Figure (cartoon, each protein chain N blue to C red):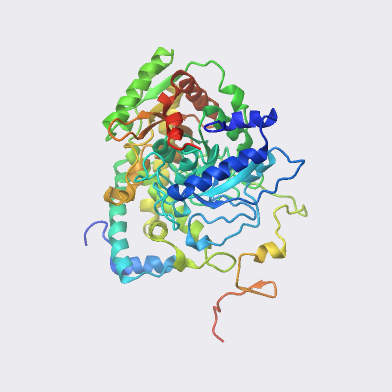
Length: 101
Length: 461
């Protein structure tokens, strides 16, 4: 197999992982475009990164904690929580069944 | 009377009671009525303001439609969120509202801010006010267009890698990307969380300094904001300072000749003004594109995982083509067997880029470079370029990857097509006052060669 090439199955697998459904046309298109991108980013291998540690954030980060029992200023009321959904029943979000009976 | 007035001068007029808030807001609403259809720059215009007798002072500003604004529709230019009404306010807009601003409207962007042209918006592309057949750049293309055509005195955008500076360059205005962590991301619809930075798009350097002072600073709702004190940028930019300015060949490779000419012209002016120009060496920006592509796609695939259409918004079949492509590449680089080869490798190269800037910033105070390799492309032309136009952000991406601050300002027009040219200054982490200071000096010395004023002339009252 050619370097940086993807199979149709690999593209379908990625789409399934990401919860996306693709048409035949899209599978073809994305396969070509993903291969193009993967070939470009190959240039990272021109740089030696032995003994270099990875950066996940450019700025030094520390954990932030809130004290227990403090008022949650960001809390939404029920009206606000549900104002953007159609999938509501008795103050619950309705979701698709995961288990069969 | 108001046409072309900076935000700071409008504040002054209001404070001196020379004009009322109602007059100012009505003035911009009228201009929007007149020109927005042509430009497709605002997605939502806020006509909800009720004027009362004892009215508080209110100054209008446009907000990119990926900032949650309480009770004002926020779409990120995606059909997934076409009817989304945020139940809370982003920190940036909250701070602006508290500082007497009025949200005039929400501006168009590439869907989810994925892109450099505003063409991937599910609600149609924004047109470049300088040439309606061209793209204003992106992703903050709507914000850039409303400022350059004066449908708002200033706007807020967001940048992940180029999304403030590139459209500012193409639309002929000022665009500031603050240091990562300087401005809160709370309520900004997340694209790549380790890179996203809100910032202002303005007509003057003073306005950029003025807005930054309001929106910057620690936010308890965003753990990535820093505790550092926020300087008084507005007075800091007026201090007389001389800088050592670095320039580098790596940022001129493949750059349009007319843009290079503008770059060298400014260098001569800066030397005359008493600044020192120093040649430096930096890693080629082509590596930043690769790092950005891997990291951004990876973070996109996890950030967009939340859109399931259950609690809000439409389901995942509503994602456009660009978002799907990015989500899938993200899933790929994070997946078993590729994580080390791509994601970890990119994070290591990110360290190299940061170290590279740290080294150079020991020798120089600021770095000057073009903002974009070419001026504004025609709408539809992006597809012809490799990598779907990502290459238009190549000169902006190293600063984004490393988190440093940078500002783009206009410097002349191309003779060929009469399009704005943008140059940028990059500065050390959390030294926004210095990039703003030199931009202010350049503005005072050259008036940006008249670009901003000439842009507005095409849009009379």
